[in-house]
Image (cartoon, rainbow, N blue to C red):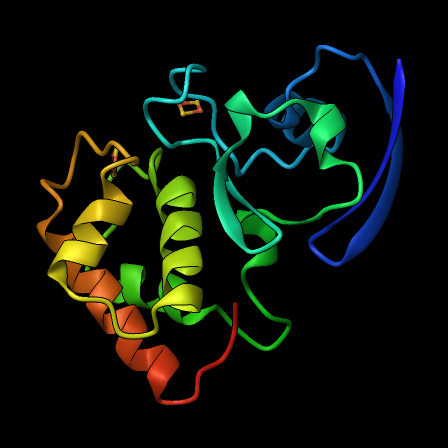
Length: 160
Ligand code: FES
Ligand code: FES
């Protein structure tokens, strides 16, 4: 067993976990934050993407022990108390969501992208989304949603 302390969605956590537990298992099974999805479990689909210290990470490839000392945001932590984050609003308004299984991971990847590059071009968006598989949308609405999220965030909607 290993003891870890970290912050997730603004809350401090101290947990005793098995050495071989993934960060994904810690988040879903121990903390019951089931917005983060398990798809492939081998780093291919991006459904499990979370933000760790501001970077998008596949939580299925990260050991739970590596969460120690980090600051984590999951999809449950994106919205502010007074409303949805720009990226969430943009995906709803531009039909970037169909079945929704890929959506939490995509939101976390896009959130990290917009924090690094506030007005990303097609290539930057494409590179970011390369790690997130969506079998429903054909990606067109997702690209539109990302551009709209950048526009909303640029207008001063700072949530997320
Ligand atoms: S579940 Fe982690 S990348 Fe697919
Ligand atoms: S909306 Fe269904 S997998 Fe992306």
